[in-house]
Length: 295
Image 1 (tube, rainbow, N blue to C red):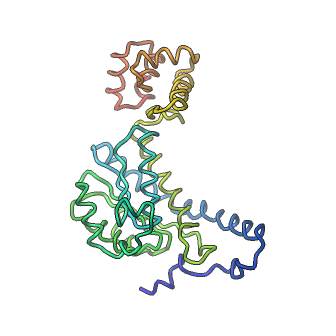
Image 2: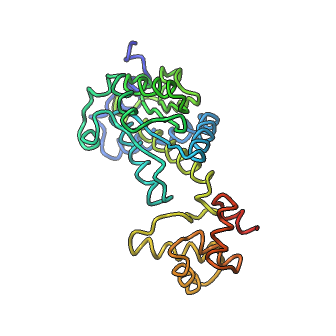
Image 3: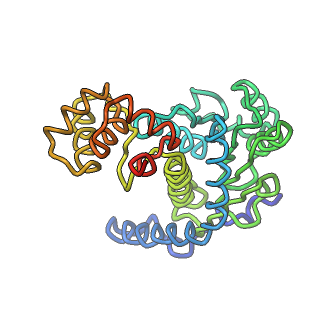
């Protein structure tokens, strides 16, 4: 492949004299270019929706969403996966990066060139048919990601690809092929910029929509978060009060009585029931607060 023909490697005509621009001029151009990211992601919404459906199916089956990539792409996957624990109390989202943990903090760029590496890293975490693999590569042709998607097909796992070039090679190996092309980078080839922004937006959608699809959200509230510090404990009580449309004092009292289980506390208030009855309703409703409140 002639890598120079990739959109992510082409020169941006708006910044040909970037080094001669004033700071305000450069920032204005960067901001204007960044606005293209939302539109590029919007064009990919049908495939993103298909990917979300695959992820929800995996999560409901007890499987995982597994982001895998190299460099910036791998780091963005790990970032989104790590946030799913405090936000949704979910351990079902994982991130894998070429070069291992050290590559999160320091570039180990050569690791991306091994198809076998992608396969072996998924083997190491026990990839199975219940999982969904989300291969991320801004260029759309990273061998490490191709190897991961090929192995995912071998074990009959769901396959999603995320690229920032059209007609990406990795799209050939995915059931849901997401391609968000926001144009050439302000700094030629620096895909941590617009490509990174598009990737982050897509990851936000995949995880948030998937978690909503398995009952981790009520209305637009995080009702299954992990309150691991004072700020989050306060947020938990406020969310319960909002969801149950009650006073803060009652929310705090029932939160304690629920054993610090936010969804249970909400149902206890909404349905005027005991902790045990609330837990039974939530179980019957598959963990969805809205459904449990209607029982």
